[in-house]
Length: 73
Image (cartoon, one colour):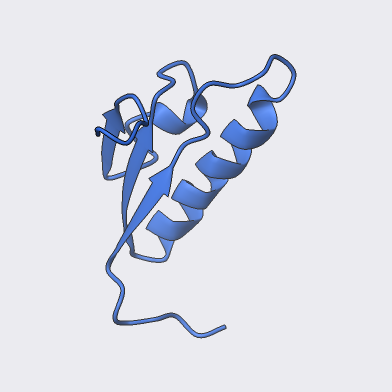
């Protein structure tokens, strides 16, 4: 699939609160998505309500927001 040149910034929304035993799958896939997209030259913005994840590592996304994921935000 060719790279789209009309997209510069991508928003990734984290899984939020998780069930014990499912944390690593969501976190790993999100972290890999951030890493791959940055390698392709996209600016990655991450929103996640759970600060205790690999995805919230400052090196993975250009901007990281740790906020509750609700309609108000």
